[in-house]
Amino acid sequence: MVRQCIDGQTSAYRVLYERYSKAMFNTALRIVNKTADAEDVLQDSFTDAFMQLSSFENKSTFGAWLKQIVVFKSITLLKKQRMSFVDMEKVEDLPEEKELDETDTLYTVEMIRQTLQQLPDGYRTVLSLYLFEGYDHEEISEILGVAQSTVRTQYIRAKQKLLKLIKKGEVYEQ
Image (tube, rainbow, N blue to C red):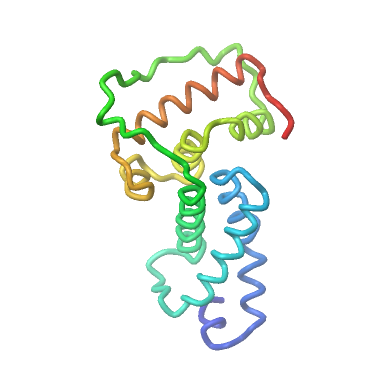
């Protein structure tokens, strides 16, 4: 399909969009947390991807390449909106990851999704990139431009906060 787009077959653009738009929208939404912002990221990402198709080198799948664009655009949007991270290398008492008793908590996908939306931007972003998008702490550190210790700490705190909210049943319709 990419080759067909490069060769000027306009119908191929539509096929690529239809094939990847839902997954890319969900990726953006998990990071930016607002439907309108996710739609903007999606549109900007496809526009950039289509304009840069000639630089796509088939080193990965088109979907993986497009997801990188979506993630970077989502992070850029959050940075513009002043998402902040505290540099954890300057903080003395870093939390240790504790074993959490999850046996008495009944999870549903919708409950987790709604609770995840309640997390602060930094927590939600790190958790989403790690758990849903498959980035490791080093890659997230590079994407966000923060220390790896900051990413690890944000991840630990995000996971603890998410489980705490779920256990308390503090899920609010948004």
